[in-house]
Image (tube, rainbow, N blue to C red; front, top):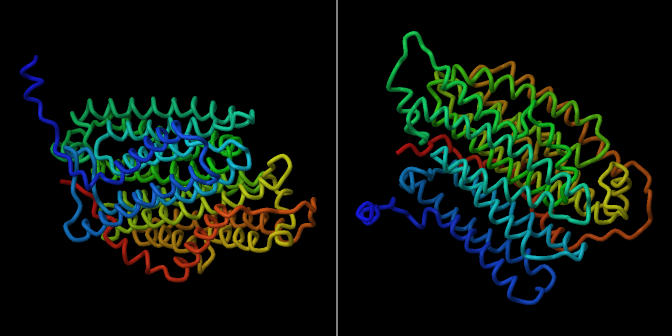
Length: 504
């Protein structure tokens, strides 16, 4: 036994390639250590430190992007992680969301007299889990990233101990998240039993190396189905979305922004990578299932949002609808015989990157509005006459809502147009039509919020305050939305190689 231990050689690690993860981990540990050993920092100190750490990770990710452009994608750490532009773009989106949410959270916690380093450390650890999920080339490593992300989100959802709704949201999320993880892990076990590997690339090789006559992939298909159910819970696909509006409404609003951005981006990118990399040979089996799930998710997310009266619940169903749009891109990737099959991955990458900034900005406005109501309400009534009380804030919210609706000259239009264009290119006309109709239906939801802001009479005359960090976060989100909407090639020219995933 001692000889075996002495001769064990671990995999080679390219530390620069995993530097964003290392920076986030070191930042989280330092933030907890220094924060616990020093007196209370000045207002905004913890949030600013978290934002700076995430900015360093973004800068390193940009350098990695340049290296991939010149030398191509590759596998890392014994082929457990993938380094390609698809993973790096997801990392940049995740870290950008951490920057914006940290700024908003700083103002939110200061108003609650509860500013502490723990929340920001959880943001950083959740980001680590999200990045590992997005870059995983191994189902076991993916599960570790999933649990790292999920455990952080459970704690964040229940972090406001003064509100019963927050505790309830954390408990609901924990219970349903545990079920989702169990489904996913059982699916991994069945897949391993069929193929003899948990590495995505090796699974694909194993499935391509033999042809059963008659074809009998029952065990494999059950495993793939269970993994899809697990992802469905995490991504809020219909019919696994029931937890989403309750958890979004009960959680502290900055945490809701974090879940809607980082949690959804990580889970969607991981879902796409698993199916495109490991199971392309079985696309005829999972493609129709994804088509049905995306159609149901689009319809339910758009229609049910109409009857909601709380803005956070409206945006929760809106996020479900956005997940349906992104799933259309995965369905596009199932058309292996089409020369335009790679457009699906490019459209997905663009969508998740733009969606992350868009949803954080929207929930940031909701956070500010809730802070200026006596009971922290987020109902439509809380937004009445916002255009008269704070016209710049109402204008920012209008821009973000128009972008979510997919109006031209906004980033939302670029994202949705790319998905629909990819669906049309491979012949998924029925899904493209459903997506366009649901986009029109969802626009009514955003219109209700805008009408409440600009046309309704005020229910209060109390002064309305917007803290500096929240204003910066909202301004960055709005600026990103408008710049990419007016000059989409700034992003589209950089993402032309997103479909080249690491395979060796």
